[in-house]
Image (cartoon, rainbow, N blue to C red; front, side):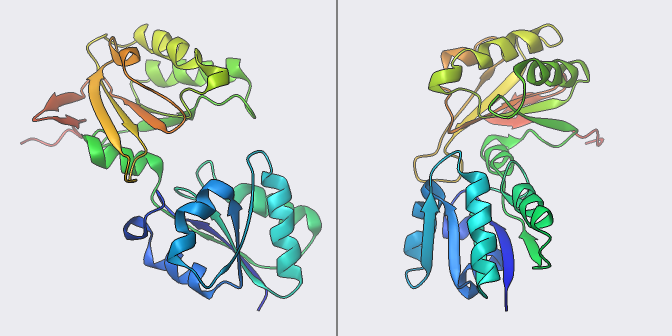
Length: 243
């Protein structure tokens, strides 16, 4: 039966992929995704037909998924983390809606980078938090900085995705300076690289010192709120329970 399933594969290891995601991939006729994500899971599903493409080909990828589904296939479109959080779910739904097709689209969630990073650091996301991508590929930079400023003023824990690339080396510096206007330099900050993968690394530092650590496109940066603290090597944001 023709169907499109947009699947969040989590960090990429089998143990952190949900049973529902695993089952959907196993039952798919074709699995399509960004080349890096295909490489992460290809060995787990050796009998599957995989089709991969590069970065910035997201719309073309969704159009190919729709084409394969219209040919009568059960197609799995994979995203790292959760398919509905900076993933492929929204694009796929838009492409199908624009086509006027009646092919059903099922969104299957996965473990996000924020979830994975927070678990490594302790419990920094126990209260209200904002997730903000510093990539200005699709969002104006001034709007990104405005969102950072509003989140800082609102005392949200702030989780930064895509914090630094070769072409955006200074964005994280500006974001940090914006947050410092509303938050103490001693505010705890956690940096996790390759969360949930074999090469995972993490550091717990402060807002004042965070730029002394390696931060790249494989990193998630979690900046605590006014109540976040560090104890026994763990970053904790209390919810407010009396203990």
